[in-house]
Amino acid sequence: MKINGSTLTCGLIGNPVEHTLSPVIHNYLAEIENRNLVYVPFQVENNRIKEAVEGAYALNIHGLNITVPYKSAVIPCLAEMDRLAENIGAVNTLVRTQKGYKGFNTDMPGLFRAMETENYTIKGESIILLGAGGAARAVAMLCMEQEAKEIFILNRSVEKAMAVAEEVNGIYKENRIIPMALSDYRKLLDRKYLAIQATSVGLSPNVEDVVISEEAFYDKIETAVDLIYNPYETRFMSMVKAHGGRAMNGLKMLLYQGIIAYELWNDVKISEKTAKEILIRMKEELKIHE
Ligand code: ATR
Picture 1 (tube, protein in one colour):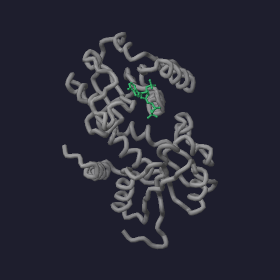
Picture 2 (cartoon, helix red, strand yellow):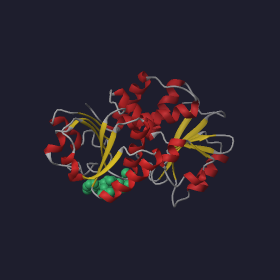
Picture 3 (cartoon, helix red, strand yellow):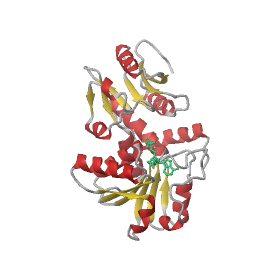
Picture 4 (tube, rainbow, N blue to C red):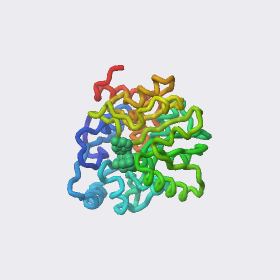
């Protein structure tokens, strides 16, 4: 890589940032596209997000990703918001404009593109969504946008599932989201559902944990996505597979959220061939050997 007076800088703002895979995605893309761009992590402490965003703009930073804990806190620092990001209430990508940065959410479009590459369909499907936190709320929004038939939100605290359902149904002026307690899965028809696991349960090092451990639940699942990618196969995914279903993890979501951010920053379209090459690099970085 040759850095000179015209090198554009992009980066990631968060805390912590040292385990991020985003530099692998963006620096590789810049390299193969022969683009004079570098991507670096910026650790921002003590809620200094406003100063960080203003400083980045003043320094002519070309584009930014935002991660924990600033995905919502960054919103008041922006000149403009994309509609989906506004509905979700979380921003992970800033695109430079004349007035300041515009906020986007590429996590959900990233999940959608990842699912497409695995031939998963949302449109017209009956979906079981596990969880009612920030991630699950965003997935609920994606399912509404992509015209799922119905979305059953199953959560440990049913009040939180009810709150998410009310809010998201309200935004879309429809009632396709149905909140339930975890044990209510028994009330679901014996149909084959698409299940999306959007809790932190099963994340390394707690790899034996799973939100629902009853075998009967897994008989109802045809296809599944776990947003977790560490471990590479969660217990949830293994149980789905053991009952004849198909399961994918969240690594491709991470890949495509990065690719979509890069596409927004540089006004390009990245090919599937390139996406596959980056995925290989990400797996190398994570020391995953399939
Ligand atoms: P995020 O922003 O990543 O979604 P979050 O807002 O803290 O994180 O949400 C975590 C989700 O994981 C919630 O749905 C939570 O269930 P509760 O709302 O009942 O807390 C779920 N979760 C976390 N630990 C869990 C556990 N041991 N069993 C079941 N659900 C769990």
